[in-house]
Length: 442
Ligand code: PMP
Image (tube, rainbow, N blue to C red):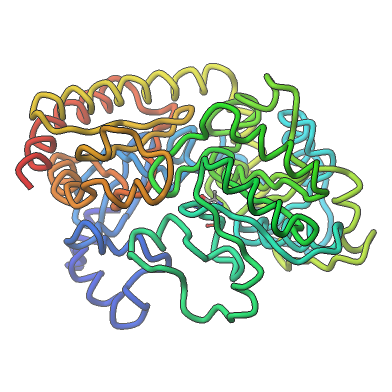
């Protein structure tokens, strides 16, 4: 436990130094290094419910939630039991299991347009496979993506990406060949005219438009009413596929993901969807799903190759299945309510300091933009970059000192869980005045 680690003298500072010597940046995913907020990242020893505990023995209310999977809170007893049961039956077979069919049917039940589904291990694999499928199905090469949207570290999708690419202020990634980059058209988000123009110019060469169903990797920038429906109309008109990336939103913003809040009401669906995070409940599961005729292009039925040694892993599948089965209407009601309460509290704390801002939200995902440009509302990545994002570091630092672990980047959404009860919310609310002051004084 924590005492044991402390007894052998391990602190986050020591662990970070050791890690930096042998792991690039000391972390296995860049944003974890706290580069844009400064200081030493807490090294986590354990997590339970709404809380994480670091090796130094500090307990924090967690607003990262493993970047999305922890919808039920950490280490939900029934999920842990399902994982333990599965593990006891064997860790990996490399052969089909019944649980995979059950997980896929759970996804299909929530989002019937996912007629067929292939399980993979990461969101990156899911979007990579979606693009390969779209190119094979249409016989075209070009892909449209939006600036500030993050779809994993797929070569073709790193151009003007959000998440860690935004946090580190990288224009793009090095190591992506010019030939690959030339096949990606990057457009401003929420800009219908730009999409129409791209189709007018390259329409017969565009295989797919890929978009976050509701972007949450440049901070939260919700789609303007009708934007996604316009993407649906234009892709149909020009024979391209629409790929809705629901890796982050899928089965977090509601029972049927973002599609349940928009497409279901409006009567349309994308051709392909990608999922991740919640469908693995904290273990590595992601998926690509969609139209039967498109999905049947995948090997062994069709000519598009895709595979994975650990795809459909039985332990990971058990975690995802248990999580989805527990994620009923009451879970979404609780997450939505906590999200709404925190948005109000953040806003009033910042208003009390006369700091112009906007807390933008999409479903139960939200993030805060500072300064006049933020207050005016950020509709695209270019606007996000004009907000006073440097105020986030002192804001974050003050929260951390008060026992609240917010995402260590101004460009990431805040994640709450169904385990965020009154006590957890109270700790966040009481930390906000000092954090707002620190942001205002920065
Ligand atoms: N798409 C979206 C919308 C994401 O938010 C992420 C991860 N944050 C990914 C894809 C990539 O998923 P992974 O990190 O599992 O590769």
